[in-house]
Length: 375
Image 1: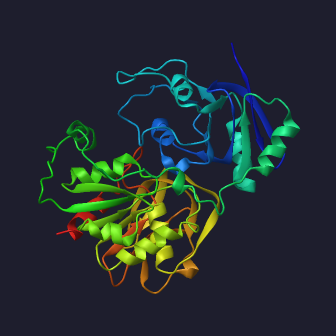
Image 2 (image 1 turned 90 degrees about the vertical axis):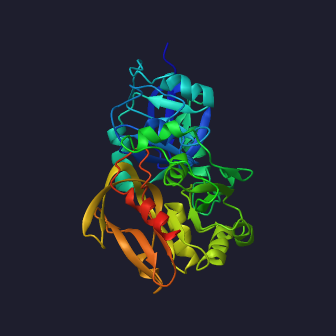
Image 3 (image 1 turned 60 degrees about the horizontal axis):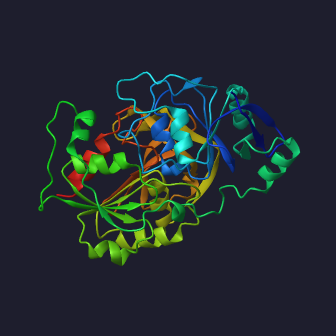
């Protein structure tokens, strides 16, 4: 038996569909992702904290869910909107279906709306605050709640997703065969390069790549200070992805300034923005963000185009970039900055996701570049 659900936007638009997943009501910024697959990785990406994610591909859930393809310990997004949910999970690796997975983790889902109309509205008018509800049928009430919701600007969402203690990454090596099927798995020993990864909401595939390149990986909460980082005597420091507005994350910027020039640094997504802010740049909010697995990026150094996986709603302001930072990559859709390197210190970062989970593998070389800096 179908259950009604409604999505209300702050501009007064209301979409009515059918609920799946958990019962309840959530608010967040309504955004969209253009990936055709990888919904489980999207659900468990902590960067989506505070957002209601709409998938543009018309059917989701056809290959089910499993315990191996997660990017964190649980889903972090506020709500999930699709055109149509597959009732059948048809894949030999499936251990459950999408509906049951959302129910288990308390995530409200909605299907049966015109997702093209919703995405078109966001593209024209920009990302908007919204409320997704299975319990309140009143349109005016939902629109008022959407307008009163906090949004993303100025919020420190990192503190809501950081781990509560340091951990040593030591995932079973059978994951290696899925990443690099033609190479034997590495076994980092006590003399292997030591990377401290600052977790602002890190996807697990990042730690997998570092580990599989032969690094010992210690994951620290993103609230760690420069003194705490350097006390572990790392050979390199990694700055992870994470949710929301980078400007309020001043404790991370201060820590990065304290490490810059003392250890090699590699940053991804939010980590890229934080490195740029620490060096004196500014960031701004994109109209509707970059979220999908097919974003074209030009590498200025090789003059090659990489097809990349992306998930961010903020970007670095090119006009504010200090002389110490050189642009290495740009987005070919809108010419926003996609990568920088420091001219004096061993530090670089990219706005996109070279760990490619889910997405293309064009940019995996960046991990190898970072690994080479540690010797």
